[in-house]
Length: 85
Image (cartoon, rainbow, N blue to C red):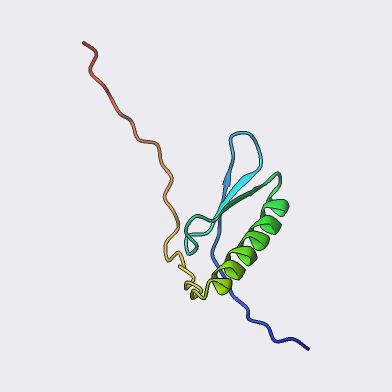
C-alpha cells in the first residue's frame, strides 16, 4: 500500500461571462482553470491542484500553506463620474 499526503486548499469559483466557471486558488499563484458546470469546475480544480503540487515536488519546492479566507469577499458596484469637456 502506498503512502499518501492530503492537502486542503481554498478555491474561488467565479461565473464566466461566456458561461461556466473560472477557478482560482489564492495559495497557488498562477493556478487558473475552468469548467462548463460547477461540478466540472470542481473536478478541474482538483486535477489542476494535483498537477501543481506534483510539479512543485518534482522541482524540490515546498507546498505552500492554504490561505484560508477569514472573511468573505465583498462585491459591490462603484460609481465613477467623469467630467465632459
